Length: 345
Image (cartoon, rainbow, N blue to C red):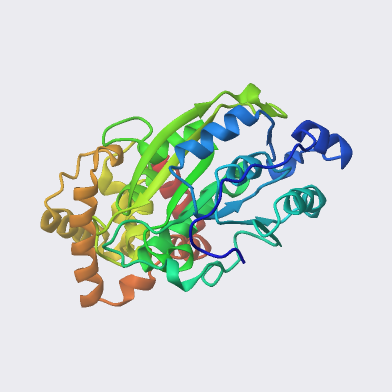
């Protein structure tokens, strides 16, 4: 592990280009894994600059692939770079980078969705949550197929202050499909407003800092790519357990084109749905005819606080799942359930 303290300026020695690395190790992007390589080092340098000053920082890169962003991070004079790569085809090329940067690059062959980063970096890096962010950064060009589950996982880590956030308010700079980037940063009332908007924004300051055209990637994806920076808030805008907030937000956006009471009603069993939904909206002071995209984080705070009280009064609500009730009703009375399904469409 690299020693902390003042580091001399570091630059990688001359190396084969990323395109040459791909050719040398016969690498091909796997479409099923949503892999897209970014070969232009000017762009990878730009992404890394957008992450902030990385001098003497400890960086956790996810999905390094052939190592384009990896090179730019190493050239930013970091203390140490930890990369986690699931695809064994990329390990030899990353090892070449590690050999060129002794003591700087640590390679883990593993799955970022399950890798435990809590003990990866020195204890001395830890900061109180109320302090400035620690000198720890997460950077990654995420495969599209894992980007949403991964950011939801990390947002839950932010809520619990565990995982990469045991060090404090660790900042993240990540790539997403442009549409997902726009959802993450969408304001109240916009067409892109979604579950992701609320879940990210109640916990973090979220910025869409850069758009990269699809043609910059190999193979070219069908969409452009957005780079998003997340900085956890010192205090979440909704102070309820993550799973409870997620439950309320998911249900609200189930019927995004309908009034919000339709989706929120699915929080409650059918026999009490109308009464309980009216109670929830009345106590939260939320207009039942607002569309889900019109609900602000403040609205969701009120809804979550009231829903929590209702769950405390009736603990069965914590485990209620309308899909399970729907399935049971369907098996008991298939004709009635088909009618209900058609009415919801």
